[in-house]
Structure formats: C-alpha cells, structure tokens
Figure (cartoon, rainbow, N blue to C red):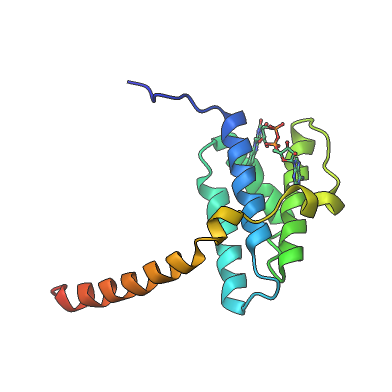
Length: 138
Ligand SMILES: Cc1cc2nc3c(=O)[nH]c(=O)nc-3n(C[C@H](O)[C@H](O)[C@H](O)COP(=O)(O)OP(=O)(O)OC[C@H]3O[C@@H](n4cnc5c(N)ncnc54)[C@H](O)[C@@H]3O)c2cc1C
C-alpha cells in the first residue's frame, strides 16, 4: 500500500531546502569548534542519506568540491546558497543572488519562541538519561 501523500523529488527538494536554509539562518554567528564539527558532519551524513538517490550522489560530488563552511553563521548561509546554486545549475534552474539570502531565509520565529520550553525539556531529558543509565544492566 502506498503512502497517503505521494512525495516527489520536487516537493522533497523544496521542503528540504527550506529546512537547510533555515538551519543555516539559525546557525550561531560565532560557532564553537564543536558546533563547526557538528555541522560539517551533519552535511556530509545528510549527503549520504538524502532519500533521492541521484540527487544524493550529485550532492556528494558538489560538497566534495566545496566542503561545508561552518566557520560563522554568514559563512554557512553563503555556503548553503552556493551549493543550492550548484544544484540549480545542474538541473537548469535560474541561479539565486546569494547577496539576498538573508532577505529570503530567516530563523523560524515560532520555533525560537519556544526555546525556553526546549531548555526545560532538555533539563528533564538529562535527568531521564541519568536515571536510564543507572538502570541499564551492563
Ligand atoms: C540536496 C539536494 C539535491 C538535489 N538534487 C537534485 C537533482 O540532482 N535533480 C533534481 O531534479 N532535483 C534535485 N533536487 C531538488 C531541486 O533542487 C528542487 O528542490 C526542486 O526541483 C524544486 O525546485 P523549486 O523550483 O521549487 O525551488 P527549490 O530549488 O526547491 O528552491 C526553493 C526556493 O529557494 C529559493 N532558492 C533557489 N535557489 C536558492 C539558493 N541558491 N539559495 C537560497 N535560496 C534559493 C527560491 O526562492 C526557491 O523558490 C535536490 C534537492 C536537494 C535538497
């Protein structure tokens, strides 16, 4: 039986770019070394598992040529715009003017508005993990 709503490469791509550009907009202005490593790891893993095989394959090549730049928020947003443009080029779409990326994409305000709740959740979860650790037989 098929899924209730069929997903094609176009809808998948559009939603994924929304996610990726929003991720870049929310990335810290001055990331720690750990945050930089995390984002590099994430983008490389993402390119391996993106659920459109030909897209994933060509994206792996794109980021091999231009590896993720997570040195700062603006650097990451520009990198995302560049690699999106590489995909646009490959599939014959118009290129986007990367000087306008900050006008087009921003953080998800409704999501950050709940950051306090997220912090509460993290605190709770931390407690949960330590309880779990105590109960797990070795
Ligand atoms: C990692 C990845 C690889 C893909 N590879 C392929 C592939 O190999 N073959 C294929 O057919 N499809 C591929 N896709 C899908 C493709 O990129 C589009 O998402 C899809 O064709 C829908 O295009 P769209 O015109 O709605 O705009 P999209 O390209 O989805 O972009 C959404 C919106 O982002 C804005 N935008 C466009 N370019 C940029 C940019 N450079 N920087 C910032 N914002 C921009 C525009 O306002 C646009 O309307 C891939 C998608 C992803 C996420």
